[in-house]
Length: 108
Image 1 (tube, rainbow, N blue to C red):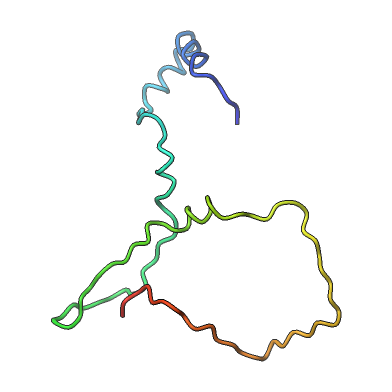
Image 2 (spheres, helix red, strand yellow; image 1 turned 90 degrees about the horizontal axis):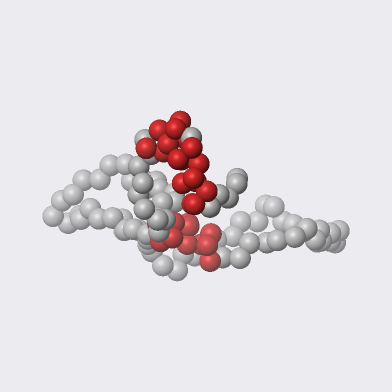
């Protein structure tokens, strides 16, 4: 990637007719809004079919794209990882454990 000042681009557009023609075909939507980075992320259906009735209401729960928020505000590991070797540590791959969910985000 190469940074170019806007004044340099304008000078080049005056000299280069082919470049000007390409730029005229690109819509200018104005300056970038940093808040637009908070939309998007992963989406998926949790239920492919639902039928509404008097007792069942169909609703949607939107957490407004938590994935970009976490990427922006959460720290990432940096540097060379330190490998910790512990030959005396025994891992029990056969034991199952369950972590209970404390809050329900999705309705049945």
